[in-house]
Image 1 (spheres, rainbow, N blue to C red):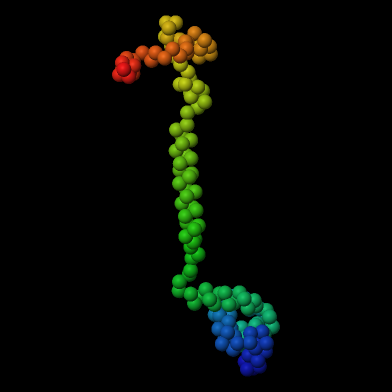
Image 2 (image 1 turned 60 degrees about the vertical axis):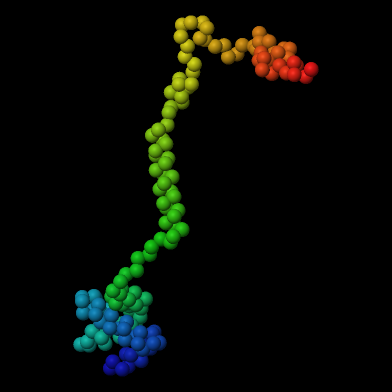
Length: 156
């Protein structure tokens, strides 16, 4: 009876080796308590598994995934690539710098207060920054006020 069932399953899974592995996985699932999707008819778990595969009662892809997961000894964890690691570290550095500078920031009011010129009570200490420069003599009379530049005696 199992021979006819294998022939029926070849249409679903063309490779006999894959068929044996998948049917064995389904038989193990049945043995561990998975519900049976066809009538048992006093058949063993391997025959029931083949009948379920031939009647499309189970997902072959799900059985293949569970088979691979059961045989794997090392589960590969997807690690980020070098570029992603560099980008993540740069973003972390920027966030740290931003946090550092945001805590060191001076408020606008404190900045304005510290930039004002604070004078005493004396009038001579107060500066008028808006006054005209008209009282300063910019006339060029050739006198620089330094005698060391007077070379007229050496020309004779």
